[in-house]
Image (cartoon, rainbow, N blue to C red; front, top):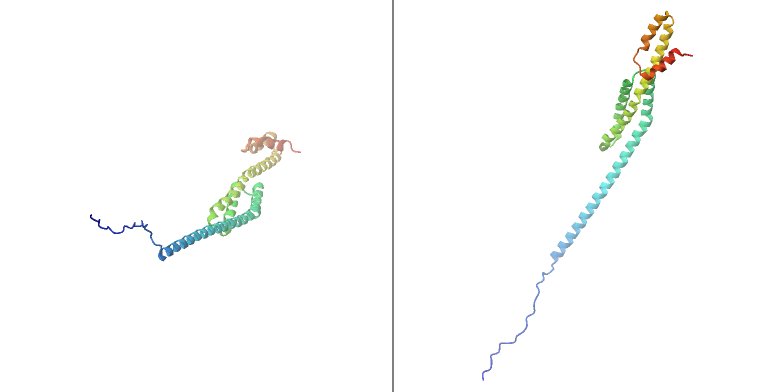
Length: 199
């Protein structure tokens, strides 16, 4: 009887899993990466904070410049407008000349103030200033019309006095010249009342 040859002792081999060993270099890389991310985040926060501070600074400068403009507009400009309106009302010059006078003063005064206005807001504030002057200028024409009407009435009144020194027909013809002056329709009845119904 044959004895089978021994195949040797069979030992089961363990199923080994492949693991990448964590080396000191990998740990250092992770640490550096984390530090860089934290640094970038800190930089982003600083940039955002700087932007907020810059915006706040610009806002304060704009408010300061507007207060200066408003101060001048409610004092010096108001005084200048009053002077010009008085001159137009008194017939010293007409509305066009009054507007030119205001614009000249406005341009010169704003040029003095412009240096105090932040560069980024100069166009906006110049429009704000010009709009105010423009609104004031539109009030001059009615004042001129009133001044012209008063002057016309005074001329007719004086002409009436002169006309009474002529014979009746000649006096009427003389007075007619002044009544024929171009005046607004609504002024005619008022002028006639002044001339023919004087106290």
